Image 1 (cartoon, one colour):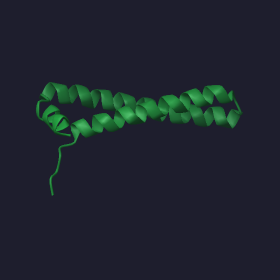
Image 2 (image 1 turned 180 degrees about the horizontal axis):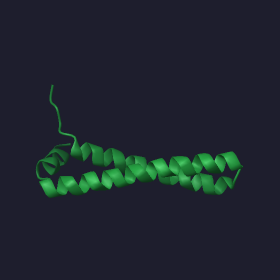
Image 3 (image 1 turned 60 degrees about the horizontal axis):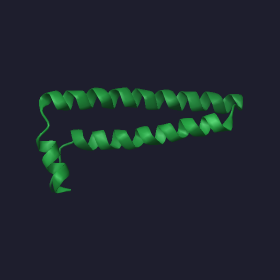
Image 4 (image 1 turned 30 degrees about the vertical axis):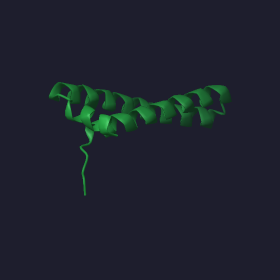
Length: 77
């Protein structure tokens, strides 16, 4: 926990901009996967392909959560 806090404090403005860019790109990919999965489900397509897309979507969700945590300042109540 303390290491993560120190990492956040050391981010430069350039680092934050790069993280935001990656975050937005991954968010778009996540939305695209939603649409692709929905389309494949409507077509009754290959279940294996749908499972692969869902797995990729979960990986993206985890990365998005990590990036969001890096970009969000800690608020101590």
